[in-house]
Image (cartoon, rainbow, N blue to C red):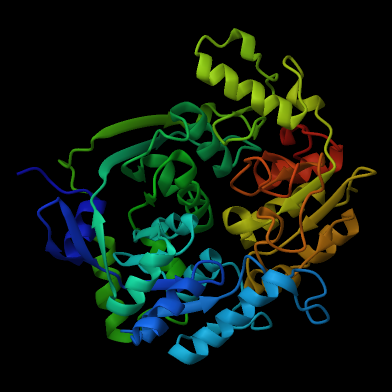
Length: 468
């Protein structure tokens, strides 16, 4: 019998029963609840007269719809306000712990889960948001679910799922100056495509992983969904243990000693077999930026916009032409010549303290280019307070950025922060499809240091030309 992968082990530890169709019933340890996907689920419980099976296994927070500017003076109205109000009422009625907007623990659900120690190695964790794969950075089996599945979790704390194939992405080498973990995942998606991981649970492994912080690992796993996979994972190690120790909801005392010892043994067996293997030399990477309307349409910043006419595949040629038309770009244009209007530094991909520190180092003693509007949105109140304690807010403000409260902000056009039609944004978020940041808005995905460099230059630019 061959060995098991990390994914196999967690799956088997949570399998309640198997069905004849090949699916299994999994026990779900943790559920993060936010305002967008939960209303229908709570309504379903109410209609069926069902209680929550385990209120303590859930944490609720509003993140997509919350305002990030003048929060104390400005409560959202319309649909956003309704979503937040419904979450508050539902959490109160069903006994779900709720984190208010003005709480020091508030933030984007995929940032605060790890901060609180709610995310733990070896656990199954779900949320009604596709970027739940972020939590796999801790060696958890984490994935996004739909509204009806949220209701099932509420009522039964279980979920029927079909097991995925296994895929390993092995990272070799060391990142060069100005190259970030965001460049790794963008380069991977450009290589395998947005469907490259479809039907597979991805495990990120290799010598380069050991060099990555937990913040960087979360960025890597966060965009597994952009590679087509619902699951991205990294085996827990000493870096993981150090991050989690002392977190509010992490185990304590003897339980911590037992848990941390078990977590460090939670890894793929040497003889385990994967259905697909991908190798990537990160030392060969340059900073990447997206040019189209999918993360797959990404190139090194030193490249030029590709010409659809040179693409032999008719379907891909059509998609490229459509992307260029939407983005207002011409083939042959140097990426480094593309002017920008807005800069967004934040999101569940790149709104953590390490991201803000790195971006601040680029803008320190510099000013945003004229005509460019930049906002910095910490991923959580905890990140914001830490950044302010370190003086990062002053660095950003001095450079001309707006400093905001925590929330999803301009990553998704469900709040006050959005692009106008035709505006071009250097963004640290995870998606760049048409209208993602606002109807008609044009999004270029990149790392925090690349976004900071673009703000200073007023155009897409190679951060290595600014890094000291």
